[in-house]
Length: 152
Image (tube, rainbow, N blue to C red; front, side, top):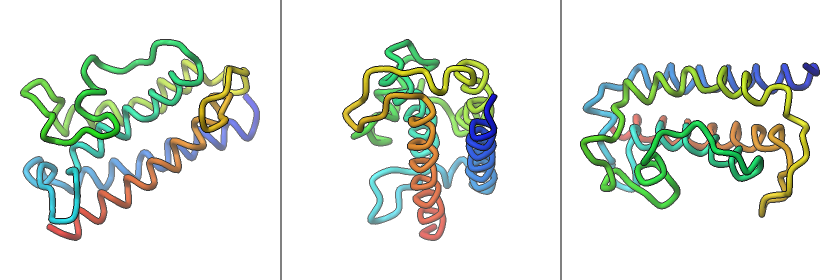
């Protein structure tokens, strides 16, 4: 594996650890709260982070992603906690999925990071490019989670 790919996976694992550290300071009850001015709660943000990474990989690779059934209807773009059902994963389950996701992505795609695919609407055409984008996206949602926590 190239050095830059090792760095990329290290960043993914490090930033994911930061999200999980923050998530571990939130009670299940607080993870359900939607403060004034917000559209979603912490639980939704955790599920969305997990889903988004796989959706972008799937958009580039045109291969099925490791996304549990119904995740898109609970955590996809434009959804909200109003879409949750009794089947929606708990915060505990989401944290476990988030914890194991970087290693699963590395195992599945680690040797394919530079493989060329047809470009997405954003021009990304490798999984490496997708991971750069999704790491940025995670940072945005980490800040949202921190902002929600401040409002509690």
